[in-house]
Length: 268
Length: 268
Image 1 (cartoon, rainbow over the protein chains, first blue to last red):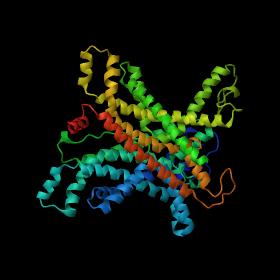
Image 2 (image 1 turned 135 degrees about the vertical axis):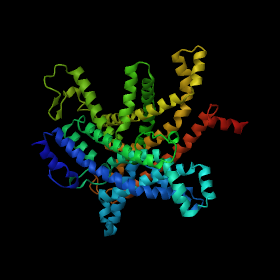
Image 3 (image 1 turned 45 degrees about the vertical axis):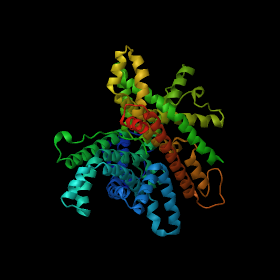
Image 4 (image 1 turned 180 degrees about the horizontal axis):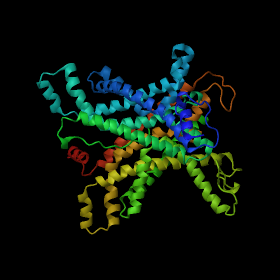
């Protein structure tokens, strides 16, 4: 079987298209590359959904934590502590069984036990808490002069937030937020190893990589392939976020622009 | 009962892994700083590779890889005149004397061996992160301090052990504290390595029927078991935060940093 054949059979296997049976024996390199790459679709999906939706909640939570109103501040602080203080792995498990027991009461919650929705919700809340803390830190380090200047120009309320506070906050938080994004994509690999079932063997990249490692007793091929895919994805994230960073800082003189320093943090 | 013991397993893992990872990290940082170029490359490569890839992939990879490495070495030593190849297609075959643990070993040996592999894996992965933090800490120590030591006629080794090492901790502690938090939150992954830890028991005991008992007299309690785990980890995080704050205050005492300066002013 040629490699093109394999690619057309398995390229969208993780979404349920193409060949139903996974290869059983005599695994070729091409099969491993194709299937693990196919699984990456899920990682990208989870990462993008959580990042795009989490961004807005993170802004809200950061504003909440910086608020002077106790009734808003305390829930935000608790939200951040709850999701940053406990392992994501346990959160996945808890959420899965939580949805499972809701499902037995109300039929509405039926789709929530699937990975595509349930796990995306957990990742959304989790990344909102982590980036909320980053944004809060940035909010605290906005130069005093900036907000005073805004007051002097007669900005207030929404206009001040939209034109001054928010862009400055993003500008300061962006390098750390990029790390958070990389980190989030890495942690999408946890989804199918917690409670969420991979229905009809439609799993993510790590799911297929460990499938091959289990079948061949040879971890030295699938995991490096997986690592290669993730390094590629990290490079893409760095490129995109770097472009946004340049845009956020475009009004600053060259030598005062913050340099992006990338350090992938560990697991959460 | 086993459920409670498994909390001990997690704490034991933390107690063993943290110092081992620190030792690995120290070794890695020393290697990366070395003047002997190949050794320095080795140290830097160790830091770079482990940090670039999702750790969960490493956890899955190292357990099989380490297991096979040990068996391979024992195979070479114990049965040198083994006729067959070790890697036969998809199988990894060693002679029965080289099996680890031995086929006829008691159950607890198997469990301990799995645990030791898990500790080693955690140490290698977190050692790389610790190496990075310590390397940064070593570079953060003011150059003047080292030059003064040289001026007093200390050798390179003396400077390292007497001046650099005692001072670097205060710079490294925020990073190490962060790492500790991450390490505590990575412990549920023990479950993936086949150790019967709290996640295993929570799934087992909370379910309607388990692998060992056909039916429990209660419904699906897994949600509540995982809630207990969530609270356990939150508590662990809170306690660590308090301890680390105390440690930081102790370490900054008398240091040439702004924190140390602030303490001096309060005292004076």
